[in-house]
Length: 386
Ligand SMILES: [Zn+2]
Ligand SMILES: [Zn+2]
Image 1 (cartoon, rainbow, N blue to C red):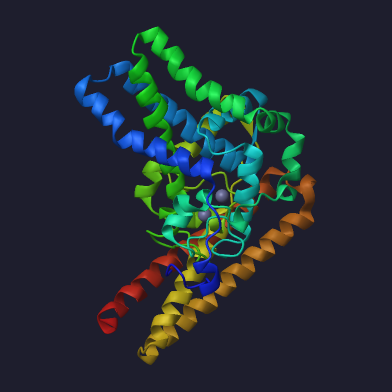
Image 2 (tube, rainbow, N blue to C red; image 1 turned 120 degrees about the vertical axis):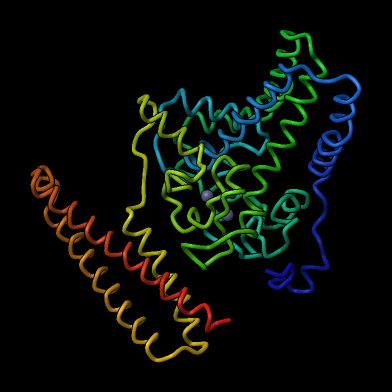
């Protein structure tokens, strides 16, 4: 993942011109966040109301980006009623990360061409800085917006309304809400500095971490096809988006953290909204497919290690496991075929439905146990690899 591995010397030496407005804006807000904000706090202190407002607005903005901009509009992983979409569009706009229409167009390109320095808008292969913020500071050809990616979103009147009135919305929310709260509480400056400036700067960097840190620091349990990684610490800062390796492997899933203990408040919010009847059609990748991806990667890693030199008995064990793995997948494909052939009517038959579900559960369990055996095999290779 070196900074210049994929770039030609020519491209590296000729940087595109600065986007002056963005450079000045990011420069000033970040500077204020590390100078005026702490200065005012030390000299005058901040009211509890200002801290609470900053935390609430940070949460609303951040989760509107992850739940709305990302999982709802960019990936269409669930459907939401219009009041939910309106709130997500308003507070997502307040996070100042462009309109939904532009954001989703770039994000879909990021998934399609991830790590490609010529096409990914914020490729980590260009540099960590570029992926984090640099891509917005210059007129990079990769930052051009291709609206042909988001024709489906044109059917959503809230998306198009937000795109049309994006700037008035940005100003009204970012200045209007802190000023209104300042008027109510009497702490004008505290509200402007904490709920205005600090909240916006923190919200920016938390989202930017998904493009920078979540493509750098962590594990890759599901796929080695790209740089996206899983990291629980990053999830804490990004409203659950730190399970980025899973997300790039299964972008159609409304969840990023799939285990109950994984920190994914965006998923929890979607679930709560679904229980309230405001969200429907949540898409989940079947457990079997998730396990299959993990196991395939573990087999590849084991094979790699065995190729580096291992006794014949290990190779035999691995071949045996691979045979069983293929057999399990074959059986699962048969069940899937049967399900399609049976059609919707047969699935109304309770016995047939339960029988099919039992079969799938059995096959999932087989993969689970196989994963345990592979772990044991990996661990027993440990001393020999050392
Ligand atoms: Zn995504
Ligand atoms: Zn990514």
